Length: 325
Ligand SMILES: Cc1cc2nc3c(=O)[nH]c(=O)nc-3n(C[C@H](O)[C@H](O)[C@H](O)COP(=O)(O)O)c2cc1C
Image: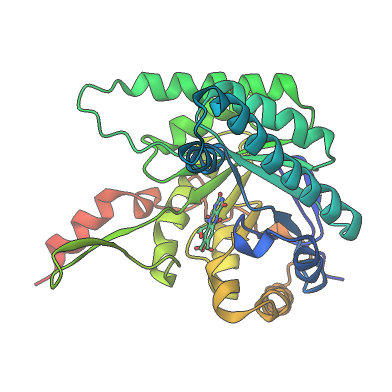
């Protein structure tokens, strides 16, 4: 009997497919449909502190009373947090799979405040959606490291549910960052978030938004870093994310060392049916390979388990191009 259960960041999942934080997971009834379609866990759409600020700024502009600024901000904040807590509670009422809340903040006290309320509302875990795009020429990278350490320590002191950190592939030295996060209490990491991608329109001479969805080719970096991090960082629990579109991609991430995968663009493109198709193909592949459980092949091709780890590194790239005529 094939068992596709997996353990990720202290959670037991019936299978390794997690639905990523997005518009897909913004509604309790919709989340129930994702569970019925086969999802192993769901990450709710992020609660963004910045969005609260933006919305209250709009309301403040329409107010004639400067003294109302704090009042409006606190009103919008309470309103948005309450809707988010309701989303958690309703989703938990309808679903039995683990429900992971997600937050994105910019002030340190907001991370703690939101985390506290989310844990109290009954979320099974919390994903910290962290994004820095440092462009200041005088910026000291140590500040970023210190920010992550302080953040994960404080959140872990505040809540007892598992806490994962979703990072960007532009976050600097990825293995070192994951090691720092793991040592300081992160139960898991998500490799990677994918943000707004800029483009340039050569006709209008304007900067525009490029595709909001990932492409299958985006999986390459996800595989590279999943393999390197799982091979090098002891105790890191990884959910691979970005560019995972087909059933083969899920197996590749598990072979690279992921405990689970997160899917977003492929569900937007193909609908919920893709979840059961992937699970059926995963089981068929395991049966052909005579694997009974995911643990039997997870990490088989991680950085430490491949004969030539340089295949995951730049050295191979140079060899490839110097051999091309
Ligand atoms: C429409 C849309 C909304 C998203 N909203 C969020 C969000 O609220 N929080 C978050 O952490 N990631 C968000 N993401 C990023 C996804 O969770 C995911 O990390 C990214 O799309 C890469 O995965 P994929 O290649 O499977 O699409 C969003 C992505 C899309 C396409």
